[in-house]
Amino acid sequence: RKVPLLQKTRTVDLYGVHKYLRCMYVMWFVRLFDFLEMSMVVPSLQGLIETLGGTVQQYYLCLSLFVAMLMVVRPCVGKFVDANHQNLWLAYNFTLSVSVLSNVLYAMSPNWNLPILVLVARGFAGVGSASEGLMFIYLNRVAMPGERQEWVTKFAATRSIGYFCGPMIATMLSTLCEALFPTMGSDPKAAIGPFALPGWFLAAGNLVMLVLINMFWKEPPLESLQQRKPNMVTASGVQQPQLPRDMTVHGFLLSWIVVIVMLGNFAGSFIGLGAEQLVSPTTAHLLGWDMRHPHLNGYVFSAIGMVLFISQLVVLHFAKQRMEDRVLFITGIAGMVGCLALVAISWHSIVPDKYLEPFSNPRDLHIFLQFTLPLLAVYGFMPLCMNCSVALFMRLANYCLAGKIGMAQAVQLNITSLAPLLAPLYELALYPSEEEKAGQPPLRCLVGMIGFGALILGIGGLAFDKWGAGGALKPKPGSNNSSAVTPSSAVTPTPDLEGRAAKEASVVIVDGDDSPSQTVRRKPPRYLQYTASQMQDNGSDEVCWPNKDDDDGDEACTSSSDHHVSK
Image (cartoon, rainbow, N blue to C red; front, side, top):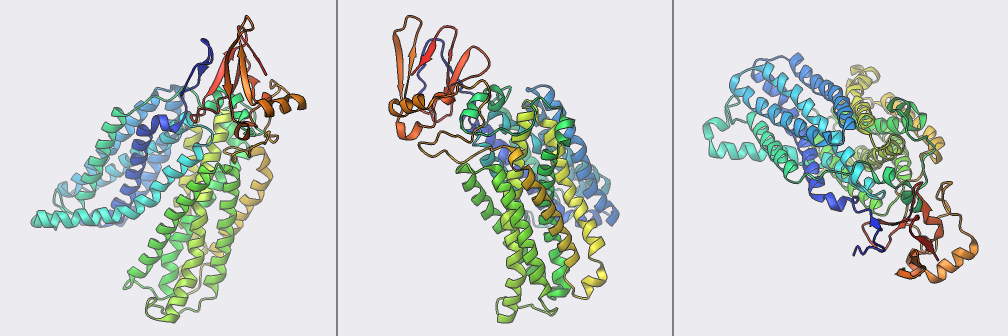
């Protein structure tokens, strides 16, 4: 499929996720184990500490230490990777090794009866979770322009899968342990008891990932495709952002165009987590779902998980259709704000009472749907906002920072991580216990989140054109991509040349003695958009154009010092 046009012609065959699939899927499972850890360890963490004689303060210290270590180590790892491209492999080995160690310490803590060991284990777990940003750095270096958004969505799907499967795996492990080891299986302080089992399972899983990442590791290119061949990206109809190149990380992060993207990602996380954390206190008194009916809240959270997973699939479909990341991001934040307004209106109209039989009483079913459906709509738009803002940030960082996005990506992830820390404080201030016990819905909390999201949406509209167009829709046959930004070095086609190109739709390479060397025939209906305007000078002695005959998205180049291109 790759036939050289001339002896000195070369093709760019380093890019495309399909050439790094095994390594990418190992990274996907590494990310999945991070969320399995959250859903298997955190729900039983307080029970473990109390069993070992710890206090509630130690439980909250464990939660805070995990987030604090994660936010401190992320920028360090990002800076380390930016310093040398080979450090990416070293960073993965380090973080996975720490993850194995943290889970082993957690699994040993019940048998050793040391609450402080649980604290140390959770601190190490925060260090190990710093691998979250490494997969985005790797993806940025290997992906074609239209693939980044699709794979960001695939990585984001690990959250919903992990939260959905984690509790089921923990239950299955506990049941199996009790069947095989009746004595230890029910002893909370046993070496393979109910508290230790999740730790051993996660330690084994991370150890397998450590082995696989070394087996299937394939070194990514030194720089992304956009940095190596900017003319090829421009020729594919990508509108470049209105930002300077070669910016410092500090200057890039302080640009208001970038700040809106980071705040939009934070807003999506803040609204999603805030609405989720409002469910239990609201239903306790508004719907009468007290501690004797925990399964009713379970139905709501299970429905949220299912909607998130389905929405991830929808975003993945849009990504494969090459929808613009900026369009999906704005659509996501607008949808979340609008649906959150419906939540406020719907909850406000519910009369406080006991609605305990939603599947047998028509009145209770009506209230259950009135409470749940608007909330589910919020989570239907959440992946559009979250995933596409990450893809948009990666594209901007790659354009402005010469592909060294490790530090910038760490700062962006840290800002998003502030949401689970600030959301409880926000709700504590605006939804006091007096209103909660009176059965009043959290209207002030909801209105505040709506206002914050609307502000981001309004400013995002001003930045829409400045973001550029990445991952655009596939050009229609016959389109000349007039919306693409053409660099000053590009060849300006004449109408006559465009007309002849549409008829002939072929490129003839002529060597130094004017004898035809090879002709590459192209089907006119499919490739009319790639004409003389796409055969651009890349700033050196090469003339390049997209090689659309190859699905890999490579480009063909020829040295203009020895050959010339003619129609």
